[in-house]
Amino acid sequence: MRLRVLGSGSKGNCLAVRSRGGTLVLVDCGLSFLELRKRCRPCGFDPCEAAAIFFTHDHSDHVSGLATFHRRNPGVPLFANDETAEAIAARTGVDDGWVVFDNDSPFDVEDLHVAPFPVSHDAANPVGFLVSDTVGRETTLLSSRNDPSTLFVATDTGMATEPMARALAAADCAVLESNYDSVLLETSDRAWSLKRRISGDSGHLSNDDAADLLRRANPARLGTLLLAHISQECNAPDIALASMRAALADCDRIDVELFALSQNDPSPLYEF
Image (cartoon, rainbow, N blue to C red; front, side, top):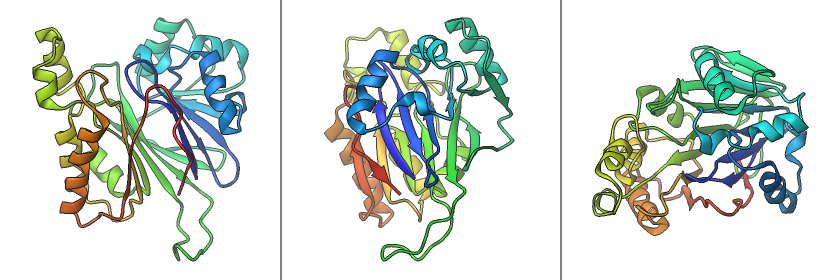
């Protein structure tokens, strides 16, 4: 599979995944339509080619671009669980085009197999996704495996659930939230109520939380780990990366490629 993360953070989230067979899907649509196309252009693809959009939850930084995207591309199906679809429709006015899934039931979109899993966030019924390419990999000099490549996505959750740990353990590439540094959050000028929301069980993962999840899952297949939703006020990429490097070392996985994602710029192309 191929992955581009087009934006990651509190001002807008969207990522694009393409299967070996060419199927393009988006996860979330939190960038304006113009900004989304602007970021995709130098990456060599048009988001309007998407076979589907998968939604993790209904917060505005994950859905704010949907109304215009859907108006321009009404034939692109929108996948969400029932509560999330209802909440997004109420927020954006998009009340058609929905394909409703159950969190316990994986589904297929062309040659991609998608398994949602529950996360803990203050949204209607938030999920992460484990997306697998149903076309097996050919044997290469780098890998003799011919099983499907798999992407893990979990960007907004206040605690690491057991389904999250199981999904991460199966991933070749992971997009995992590492939102805040605990000291920087507590010493920030943010309101006490906001600090409690962020650090609560329905808020976001700290650097230490994300590192602990990595140790718990100890994912043997993982080759690439992308740290997502890094707070611009209460974190820094070098702090988040240092915390995760320590966890990878504890798991004897210093071979894993580790990157911090950006709010303002699309990521490089990741292939796995």
